[in-house]
Amino acid sequence: MKTGNNSFLSSVFFEKDKRWLFIWVTALCTVGIWDVLFLNKPALGKVVTGFVNTFVIAALVVSFTLLIGWGLTIALHFLSRKKNKTGYIILTFFLNILRSIPQIVGVLFTYIAIAALITSGKATSGILIFPIMAVCMSLFIVNELVDLMRDRIDHFMKLDFYNAMRVCGIKESRIINFDILWKNSRIHIFNKLIAVFGSAIFLQCSVDFIISVGLSSEVNAVTLPVTLGSLLAKIDSKQDILAIGNTLTNPMYFPNLFFSHLLGVTVAFLIVFSLVCIYHISNGYAERHRL
Amino acid sequence: MIFITLLLAAFIAVIRTVNVHQEEHIGSKVKQFLDIPVTNADDRFQRALLEDAMDIFYPDQTEKNDTIVQEILSIKDDQFNEQLQKSHEKRRLSFKAFIEISLMYVKFLVIYIIVMLLTYYGVQTIASWRFIREKYAEHTHIHFPDKSLKHKITFSKSVKSFIKTLFYLVFFSPAYVIAYSIRTEFNTDSVFFMIFLAVVSNGLLITYTNKFRAFLISESRKGYIDTARVKNLNEQFTISDKGITPGALLSPVKNFKGHLFNHIFKNAHFQYLSTLKEQASFLITGLIIIEMALNIHGYLNYEMLRQILYKNYELVVLIAAYIFYTVKFTEIFTDYLMYREMKKYENR
Image (cartoon, rainbow over all chains, first blue to last red; front, top):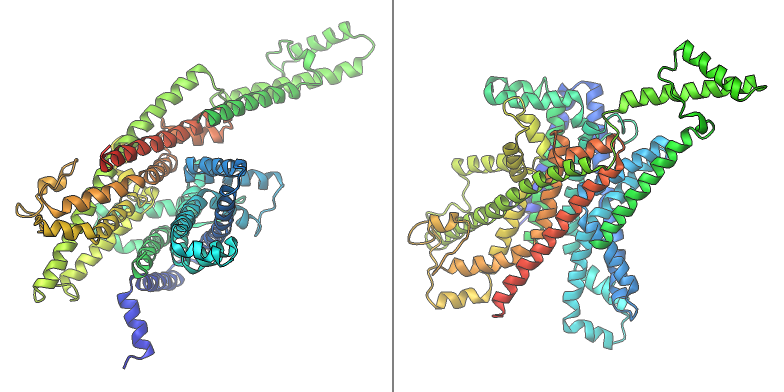
């Protein structure tokens, strides 16, 4: 007879998404304990703040992408069924423009605009900035989710059950929202949201790194929240990362990375390892549900 | 595209107008006197000369003249200092600037096309190789269960997993992490390094390799595969002369004639074409990150970052327009490829 513990262990061992989630959490805890023991307190504080800020913004991006994506999908669906297609054309045109702007360029411009608003005093720096940043990033990611949801709707509308439900007098909005998107597509949507979470971390770190390296005199560290990307761009972290290269020609230097260069190595590890784990979780989830 | 071009041109015109108005506004109170040549605002002689001239032209308002002179000198001083400080920074969209940026764009385009071709080749080759290996392992597991290592944990398997994880860490690293890690040992500012970085970093190669592999797996489960088997096609999934030849696997134009894999590959390839738009956008994002984050001088996206810093928005708009065109032309090209392939399948 299987016990609860055994089934948990077997699911962690055999199900890729759960296994990688377990590995990710375990690695984060291990790095956390190591940093508490060997990293100085001010640097530790910065790492914790950067990590929390990055993941909070990424989580907000996921939430806003879901909300905006769902809203746009429904709007596109109903506008496309109207006789007057003006609304549909305008919305599609707007989405196509967003699609044609590389995500990094879009996010970079919007972040610079946010920083300018903060500097001019029109937006106050603080907790309000997080949702603004997240909404801006969501706008450049949302197309992926809209495409997925529209594909799902188109697929189910070709099946008999859609017409059967319409004949039974069920409202179209209920069929689309509840029967197609919620009941039959939520696993697909959730899988896409995991990927969006990874993209958000990648974009957030990259844009913050670029801003900190290239626009440091224009957009200083005070205007935008500290994230893993901006932490990595700091001179201390950069020197720590450069030390990794040193170990290629001087392997005996390797152990020093975990003591003398802990700040940069930790930040780089948190970014890279999180991206790898999120990718595997998303892939594993898709495999487990046969998406 | 025409609409966006017009929109961007209008935007540049607006920026120009705003700049002119700002410049006019600076000297609005003493605008009529700003043409007076004052070479050194601190020179007492020039100051006295200006005061005397003002008193001659506007007598009986000495106090007002003093204020005007002070203001003129102050503006002249500011203009001189600003010119000195920003002489290398402030630029407008001139013909020379246009040509310079266009040349940078050509360089960007060449790198983009090379990286696109390399990833296109790499994605298909690595995914095919992985698929063939997995098929072989599956075959061994079914027909020779004693030899199979599928559910066994061995030392070599653990080492392989560890190396695989290391590769994943490299492939998923953002470009700037890899570049800074090896900056002390290699020249990271060369074009070749940029191309290498664009191919291996930012998760580009690995993401699309896995996508292509997923297409191969899903195609291999379809009904037409059984039909192909019945027709007695070669289904030996080994990289050898008996199965899939190394030459066919490594060839840029892949053809596995007489092998079951040929049909799986061609159908997966058709699906992969539809993801090229997404891959191109991802690649452009990667190239932008590399050029901007590594501060590689003389490249399009670094130039954009520099012009944002100096607030030369006319040039920023031009560079943004070039990037937009790249994405759009890639989309058009991909649509054309899809159309051509569709025609082939529909016997048109």
